[in-house]
Length: 237
Image (cartoon, rainbow, N blue to C red; front, top):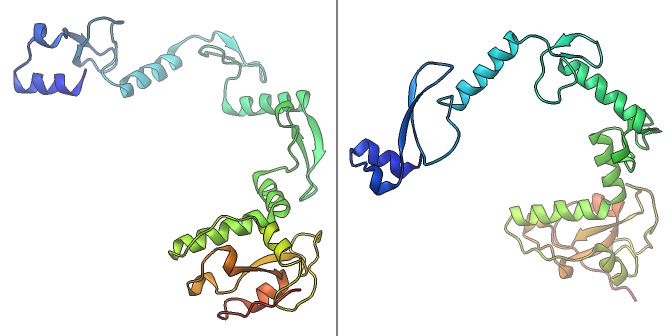
């Protein structure tokens, strides 16, 4: 029933021929209350609300005679449609058995724990969401740091510019603009000598996240400097 039709009924201005609707009265099979439905065609409604429908299905499921046998514990139960297990516990066991039968056993590259992967997730390298995120941050450190820096700049109302950190490293000849020494290109994650993006005027002091305000530095030099104010950009030949 549309909202305009309800307004017409409440105002007493409803005319079946004019609005093109036919009102029919029905009795809810759950609560026994009568309700009015407006419509031209369709199945006969049984419930006055979704709550009554869910309560009716829940009660009748308890009263129904068992028609299936649980695939795990072999206990008889009543199930709708394609149900195969009598409880969530049995369903979890069946899911684990399916993954074990159709998947592979491998070792987590982060924590070293052994876990099973099913046929649809054979490319998974982490045993959990936490390990997967940790692995992603390790392999995409520049992307994650750039995302955090752009977020901080946006939060402070500073200018934001999209750029690739690799282009900044190439521009500065892979040289730290604080100590003047070469950065380690293929260093391990969180290595003190790995390259990082440093803001000449820190974002917390109003600096922009743009090509003109960033430079290549060692991660250790960047963390040591912190946000101690504007710094002079070294000239690299």
